[in-house]
Each structure stands twice: as C-alpha cells, then as structure tokens.
Length: 440
Image 1 (spheres, rainbow, N blue to C red):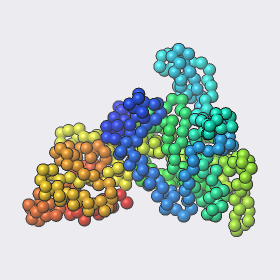
Image 2: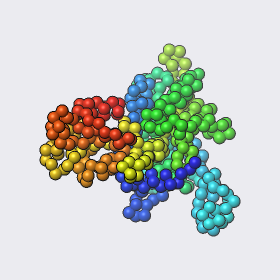
Image 3: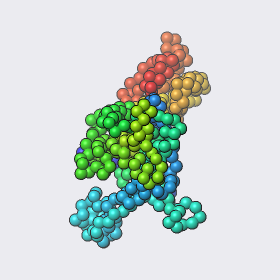
Image 4: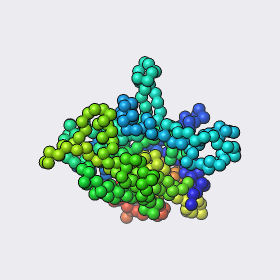
C-alpha cells in the first residue's frame, strides 16, 4: 500500500542529514532536479563502485567506456530518438497545467477539475546548439540515455581490444529527459544517472545470457540491501514492449508511492548496431575468429537507474523503533554501501587522555577503511542518534576502562551495533576485523 507519510519522512531526513537537497533551492528550485549532499554523494559512489565491481571489474568479459554527453545528432536520428522518444501530453484548458496523458484520468484535471485539450506527442530530448551558430546544422542533444555512446564505440572497443563474444561494455553517466511531470522525489528526474551494460552475444546464445543477467541483477539487489520480497519481475507482454525487443523484464520495487519500475532487462536483438551501421555507413559486423562468420551481434541490456536505486535503498533502510522510551529513527544500510562505516568517540571530550586514545583508535581503524567518523559533540546518546540517522553500522566509544581503570578491560573499547543498540567490549584488532568482514 502506498505510504505518503513514509515518503515525507524520507525526503525530510534526506535533506536534514545531507543526503539529497532540492536543486537550485535558494532560487526557488527547479522541478525535476536534485543535488546530492555530502552523505548522498558517498552513498551514490558506494553503490556505483559496487556495481562496477560486480558487473565490470570482477569479470573477464566486460569493458568500460565513458562517452561524451554531447554527440553527433545523427546518432539519435539513427536510434529513433529524434522521431520516437516521446510521451503523450495533455494540457488543462482551465488552469493550463500539463500532464502525461497515460498517468492521469483524462475525464478531468486533477488540479482544478477542468477539461483537457487533445493529446499531443511531446519529445523529451533537450535540444541545444554546438558552436557559434544556431541553425539546423549545429543542433545537438543532451543524451537521453547512456546506451547510445556504447553503441557508437562498439567498433572502437572491438578494434582496440579484439574481445571474443560474448562480451559487454559498461558505462555510468548522466542522461537528460525533459519529463512532462517529474515527481516522487528522485524517482522521475530531468537530469539522472544511469548504470548500463550492453552485452553483445551471438544470436544463438541470447537466452542463456539473458538468464545469467537476470540472476545477476537479483544478486545486486541483495548486495545493496533491497528486500527480496520488495523486488518483483514483470514480464512485459508483446503489446507493451519496444518494437525492437524480443523479451523485456521490468524489475519493479515497492516504493512508498506504489510498485514502480526500478531496473530493466531487455533483449534488443541486433536493432541498435544494425541501425547505426545503416545510419553511419560504417561496417559494424563482428567476425568470429574460429568460424570466420560475419554477423551483427545481438544485445542484452541490463539497465539501472542510479537515482531510483538510491531511493529504493533509502526506502528499504528507513526504520523507526523505540529505544530508551524515545522514538528512534535509523537507516539500516548494508555496511558495504553505508557512507560512514563506523564512528569513534571519546566518552568525554574534556578529558585529554580519552581524546588522545580515541584519536589513536580512529587512526588504526582508518587502515581498514577511510570512512571512520569522529564525533565528540554533545552527550554519547545524542552522538549515537546522529549516527543512527545516517546509517552508520558501528559506534566505538573510548572510556576510562580503555585506559585501565578496570585492569582486565584495559585496551578494550565499547562497540555499539546500530540496528539493535546492543554493546560489547572488544579490542581494537577485533573491531577492525568486524568492520572488515561487514564491508567485504
């Protein structure tokens, strides 16, 4: 069931704790744009690094590119975006608000109750001009997806590295879509980030590759902490698939505002390379070294929206419970993606001996991971609550027992666990091992 209250809490926490800020806020904002704050940047980078490690760096059949955002407009003509990258648009005759026609009751305007005009097709690509003139010959587009740059570089990758099929090309980057009605926080944006793979296969092997990527996407969902019962596969029927796709699965997630598309997995056949071969006049066939057969490879495309992924992570991680007769809010991030892995704190900041020991412990733990925070502001309970709200898995407190007040506890510290609030006494090497194991 949609939970508007939960969504409001997530948005509020995201701003309050420095995860996500409204874009251009001091000037009144700009619809469909958001800025990632200090903790949001790190969370985003951690998710992207994990994606790269799982889908590129740990595999021998994957390569990376970082294509330009601005490309020759012929690329988008060949791919069909110039003519077909459209959404249905309706405008209210009374208040003149605009909506996507497929996402609104066309009998009346939801804002004022007025009547709608005729449905029109609206191209979502941002158009601009390259160079000093503003004529048809200088038109360029902000790329609406990252895949175009991968297909345009297919021949370069083959010619430079001579990979054997099957192989894939991965890219993380920005895409831009002039959405009619951006909404739901960072779910539907005009400027977004994508993590995409184009996996090139022999046509006879597409089904096996498709199944392997389907399983791999579920493993990624598990790795970033998405509950398996909140991620659902929707087999897209023939009538709803893109014309070039022979099979598409939408991975849907139970967001606070309802079940919506999270990622996509599509078998795009040879549509893209064939279209770019025709559009460019450049031969994009692949020659099998053993059989000498020449053909245009087919493509399996696992596509991940970074921003939608981060929203799913925030929604999955958000928790409220009661601790010490107070309501506590915390983010139950998987440790490997948490922006801060642990916080080190002296029990009292006005005791130089505690502060010095805490600094020493923090320096030692930073050998395991650099994201070890320091906090000595306020009482220890308030420090714990601050770290809970940003999803820090562990809090380490240095007290007088650490210094030897209780002889048998000398050189041990208190380790507090975020999700339960439970505490235990461990040595610093033992804590280092706990953190190392948690983030692997």
